[in-house]
Image (tube, rainbow, N blue to C red; front, top):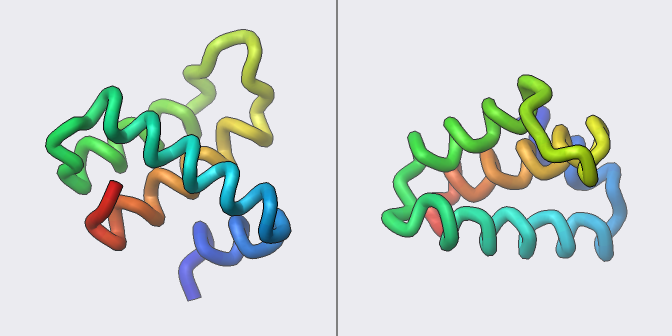
Length: 76
């Protein structure tokens, strides 16, 4: 079992869908090639604490998990 999948599954279906949608939008905007390494780099940045003031740490970690899930699945 992947940690990222488990964390997203614990969010509930609505929040999970919201996170995957947001991750997909970010990926299209900032990693238009959709390469897995780009998505993982974005996730690492979020998970390391680099986020704007409007995003709390929990949300940043959840979004990082969603980005890594997209990277593994090879789609944006």
